[in-house]
Structures are given as C-alpha cells and as structure tokens.
Image (tube, rainbow, N blue to C red; front, side, top):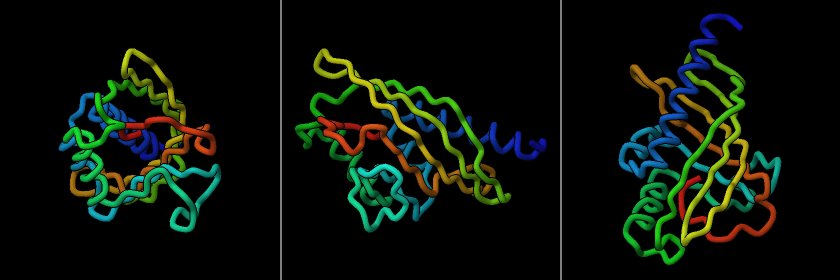
Amino acid sequence: MTPVKDTALLDAMAFVWLEADRLDQREFDDWLGMWSADAKYIVPVEPGVTDFEAHLNYAYDDAVMRAKRVERMMGGDSVSASPLARTVRALSRFRLLSDDGVTIELRCMQTLTEYRRERMKSHVADVEFTLVREGAGLKIARKVVRLINADHTLSGISYIL
C-alpha cells in the first residue's frame, strides 16, 4: 500500500470507531451529523444482496428515517426499545476496498453486544462503509450492515446496528 492509502485507511478506521462509540454512548445528535445529506443506512435481510431497493431490508433509512429511528428509541414510543439496550461495539478486520481521493470504501467486522432486561445478546456482521470527504473530514454516504444471521429470526433489535 502507498502512504496515501495508509492514511486513508487510518482516517477511515478512526472515523468508524468514532461512529461506533457515539452509538454506544447514545450521542445520537452527533451521530446523525456524521452522515452526508443523501446517505443510506441499510440492514438487508438476504445475504449477498446489492440491489437494496428491490429486496427486503430490516432498515433502508435516509436522513428523515434515521432521525425518526432515533426519536422513537429515545422518546419511549417504541415498546421494543423500552428499556433501551446498553450496547458495546467492537470493530476489527478493516479492509480498504477503494479510495479515489473523494470516496473511501471500507469493510470491517462488527460484534455488537447488547444488554437489556438482564440478558446479553451478540450480533455479528460485516459492515460496509462508503465514506466521502467533505471539507476537512469524512461523512458516511452509505452504511450496509450484513448480519451473519439476517435471513433467520431476529428478535427485538431496538437500537441502531
């Protein structure tokens, strides 16, 4: 790898670690600010799907839907989010897929552990980020969370993966 790509990988890793920490710390306003205006947050049901609009998804959120998801979680209006789970995310196995100077594509592995109602559960996923350089920083243009068991029954996911 060239030094430019090394810098891009390190910058992208730091950015997605920050995103995970903001979610775990419930810093949702700051998290919402990490997204570009037309970004998509996608959690597909079927493995390997690339045409997300033509397939079933657990989430296919634009900016309005991301804000509504946060509002429902924090407002107590969602039975599945009461009480709100405590979460800890671990990200590893980062791979820089591409960097054209404007857009960075990154894939990593995520283990999300939730604690809610005296029970602990884990969710494991490959996460694909498309990040764009805006101003002096990065923004999320697309985040695809591919749960390894997405095509099986998932119970009570009351938070953002």
